[in-house]
Image (tube, rainbow, N blue to C red):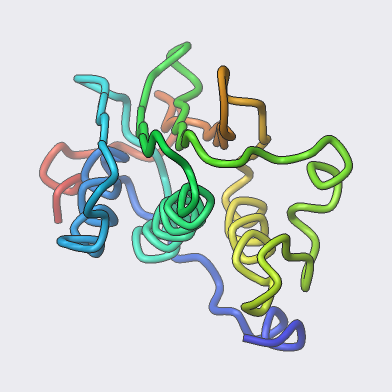
Length: 174
């Protein structure tokens, strides 16, 4: 995908969704491809629904997990943590953390820019696409150090609030 393609990137079609279902669907893409990586999944029960384009948000999770797996290629300890949590009734959080090489302070500032890559291969568009999708959803992402090693990508996303159109539980799993 080129930078020009961002202009043609499909507009988000948000619907009331269960973030945990989206995470599970994204992880299914990696079935058999994360061998040698210890996966720790901690998906909060009873997360409030979010209003997202499911396919686009699945792409966010796939990109973050793929980058995490790549960052751990040369690590002795290869651990991937995927967590969801509701820190308030208005906000949920998705965290993808790895035990890889981490991100330098200089690179943290450039990480979400198009064509920036620390890998020396690929397009450098993965995290730019993630950032674009999240911006379309009024969500935010930040990268932190994952101690003792690696990186933590934290996505904050607003939940559906009582003022939103009525949400029917059946719609969340459609």
